[in-house]
Amino acid sequence: MTEIYLKGDEDLSAFDSVEVHPVAEYGDFVDQVSEDEVGSDPDARYFWSVYLHYKTGGLDCVADFETEAGAEAYAAELRQRLMPKKRTLEEIKAYAEGAAHGHFYSDEETPWEPFEDWPQYRIEEEMGNLAAAFTNAMLWAQGGEK
Image (cartoon, rainbow, N blue to C red; front, side, top):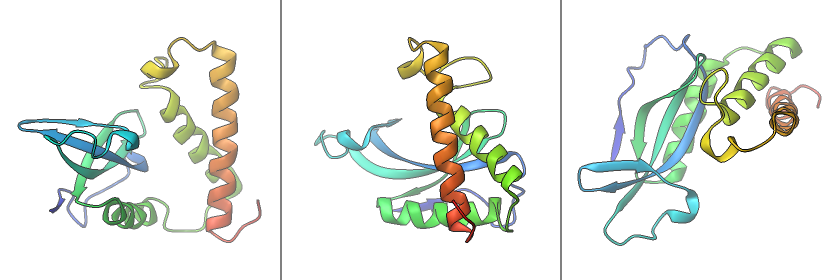
């Protein structure tokens, strides 16, 4: 089962990152699950979905794959489309900060449920750590320095 909902020439300017998540299907109900849950329910069908993350927050599912490897390969292609040219350090830092913010917040101010009880300073500290890791990874991926 491979289903790609995105057209090859579709404009991706509204998006800033690509995510891959495991999904469980229970009849007509589909929901994201953690990697630990994959295969845990014999009544569920598990697969991997590829999502584009809107710059304004939120996700849009653009493809489903039977395997994580298939989903990651397609996600890598989309990441190339989002960042096809070598970026400046400032562009990379801005991208990394946005991606880190999207990891902790569902919109500009509302933390995702696992982080809603965290003190603000802790979220900001962890966002900084994640943004630094993203920056280093992106610099390394395009042949720059860490």
